[in-house]
View: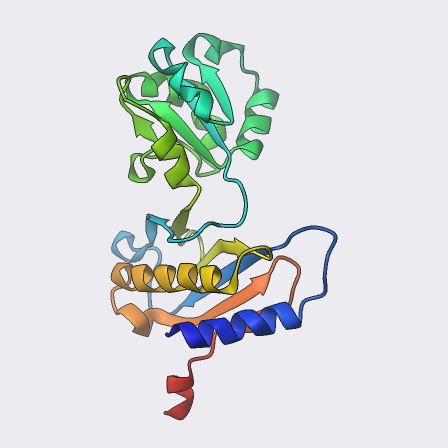
Length: 222
């Protein structure tokens, strides 16, 4: 997999996708083979910080105690521990829909789980320490975490041997999209038992556009 192959595919996607009334996202689909996703050691479940922006604002919500109220202002929304019990099911669902990542204060995680667990758990949105989203009550600043999350994606095989993720947007530069795809490819290899031999193909498309397989010229020569 090289950048030239990816850039050629990005051009094909752009040239063959009609314009919409909204800015579409670039979606990457990685189809896997010869793995058993029922086995824990063959599942993919990790976070990756991309080199370039995703082409959209990643929204964050802070779930904190009194210690971090002021510092949580860098997040899009904040729910303070004292207000946890005021959140009804409808409000929690709306919050889950509007938030990409939840950042939680470590020492109140039991209360976070009790209040938000049933809503965030099934959606895969519980504050995750792997993504740096569980923080101590004494921390200099939350801004670096929020900034890092703007480029963070989750690589996860759920009920099928496929990874589906947003990798950029129509407004992103081709070079940025290509860099993000290369980063995903190189990192996913380390998570697969047979590395590139477990990748069936990689498909790129816009939200409502035609899918294109990223073809390797080296493979075609063989």
